[in-house]
Length: 306
Length: 276
Ligand SMILES: Cc1ncc(C[n+]2csc(CCOP(=O)(O)OP(=O)(O)O)c2C)c(N)n1
Ligand SMILES: [Mg+2]
Image (cartoon, rainbow over all chains, first blue to last red):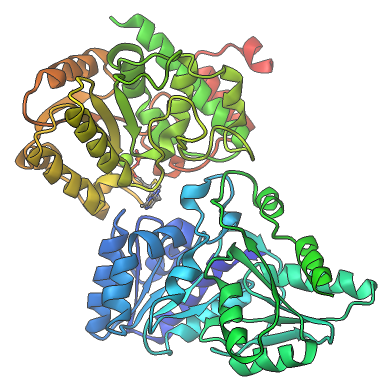
């Protein structure tokens, strides 16, 4: 069990070795984001901006405009919220090589409560032209995505989390930007999932299989751009769609799928996600249950469509 | 002097340790460093009524460094804003005591906070409302030194002075530490009192663990005309628990059972009481 945020620190250390252009910034959360591992190895290429996320994004933009590949860490709420306008008006508008890899996305932040739980970060980042979005489902996917981002031009948002997760991808897993990953084939419904909900989707599909319901499970990996061909192929086959994200349903992954389907194969979509509410304190598992983000909730949505 | 405050502050520190210990997460260092300021505020300085928490002309308080809320919750319970038993539900699902202050859920909280920097700007708004309504209450706030690296702190500083908000009194919990290390090593704020003065604020410097100094400065600040006041309180992060004092590692980690025990013993809880 490892958190996706640990993939960040581990990838940075490897990137630091292979690419002298990589610089890393943080905003007084280097332990939480795990960027401290890079700071220990490459102190000259690590910049702690202090509690100043807007400053961090501005400095990262300047570094990127000077030829660096700038990775920034913080909590997802502060990186996308406090510093939204730096991200939109400077980094994305100028298509600068800044990689946003904040941790503590979603309600699995736990006891810190609503102020620290980003549940609208995907919506915010999705609305910005030039921004690309990756939502890793486990440690290995996170690590390989963070490494791949160094060689993808322009700004990228990689959504990382605090909670330790089971490994669902193979040890020799290869990340492919812009490509969805088919995890299980089926004919009755497609479950499109991202992040921690991929494991829940697989569990739901297993349980449904016992009842004779045959689900396809697709880990989207890249939320922007979407892998349109893979999504439309699957939906053309199953004709039933469930989406699953640890995020608000307002403008998130479910919305992205709906936008694509509405223009291509209009059909009802059942969304698992947070229903226009704020987070709160609690243990990660309690909160996942409270906000309807478990395998059971996915199963219920699939059945609703049958 | 102020022996009753010293006693209360010790009890508040015990509660902070117990609450965070039971919750299994939270921020002991920054809660302990502002515990004395909060005691001085709620037991000597603020005009508030626990029986009438929304009283129109009450003094307002905004904990801008919201992560220190265990200290605020313990003080509010001690002042009878809500039953003491609630303290042991800190950070639990459905609790009125969230991980960071939530004005909708907790009686006695005037503003939600937790995202650093925002609190002080809301205190400025409250002070403006007081002026608009011709009221004579004051608005108090506590900010952190790490928090002072946020730009909005300085936007608030400029604006409050421009509007001559002499009903606004802000404490800086100047404990020298943030999460990643010493504030002076990461992005130094010094000379901090001079900065606030240059921004047009009346400034005071006190030992943030000396009740006489805290209360005296607040008394003077209340009499200042045409300027907001900044009370730079020199504090020790983790104050009162020897193994937490001045230790950056105790910013956001809960003490385990043994550490809770040790801390409570240091804070004057007897072995017998501990076994309960
Ligand atoms: C906008 C924002 N960025 C980051 C954080 C995470 N965070 C919580 S406390 C803290 C350090 C604060 O240091 P300081 O203000 O000195 O607090 P104290 O030492 O009094 O605990 C940080 C970075 C936050 N809560 N809000
Ligand atoms: Mg501090």
